[in-house]
Length: 165
Image 1 (cartoon, one colour):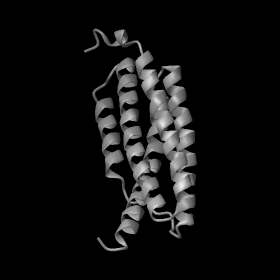
Image 2: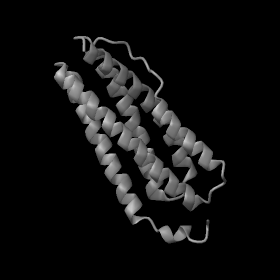
Image 3: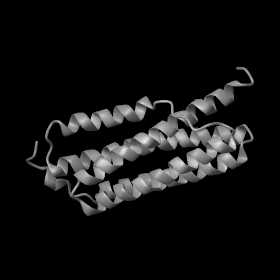
Image 4: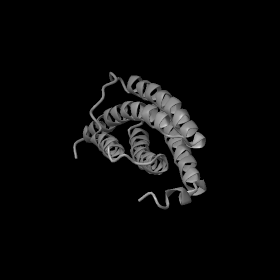
């Protein structure tokens, strides 16, 4: 592995997450509008605001490491959004859609946690302390968001889904 390889990986992952967060921002707006459960709607709305802050923070990371903010299409998040679009075309009930949206959001959070964890570790290893601090901050937010979504799923009344199959 060349001495420049960790920097290439960091740059690639940073651009991937910049794309991911932009895609997530748009998806969260749609998801918050299509659910009726107030707690879930509020969670999506809050996460949308948080995502905008994370985009701003990523732009700070780009600046700290001397790069122009540039997105490299995140196909993983694009695939999850495509799954959502395909599910909504099946004309699900509101309760089915709410459960699906929560599951989808949890998948996104797991992806973000893995990505930000790796980015933060790379930044630390490369001596990019300021960038690493910003990435660790976002990682903590993603972990908190996942916990909130899991708690909402645990509290959900799944009996609403009976007879809807």
